[in-house]
Length: 123
Figure 1 (cartoon, rainbow, N blue to C red):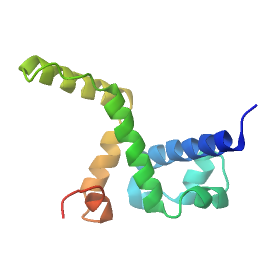
Figure 2 (figure 1 turned 30 degrees about the vertical axis):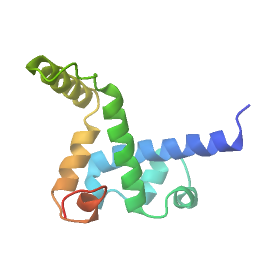
Figure 3 (figure 1 turned 60 degrees about the horizontal axis):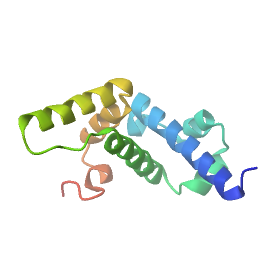
């Protein structure tokens, strides 16, 4: 039997997964929280319980994408060219298996808003 905390975490993960797909498909401006809630199979109220704003949701989605990317990266063995090639191959495989990170980051790079300044981005 799952606990309430496990249910909350599973719901949060579903919402973040739906947000990743919505932001990748429609960009930040085109993705609405109502669509994200529908994709996740939750109510708008439940989405706003977990995320106070669309920006908070985008940040959670970006965190998840970069966490998934980091988990897929091999350890770099030395600083030689083969180590760099192995990292590039891993990134290309990650992007090929799920292009959402590329789509979300390209969309974010098209604007000079708070998403580009988040987590120490350019001023």
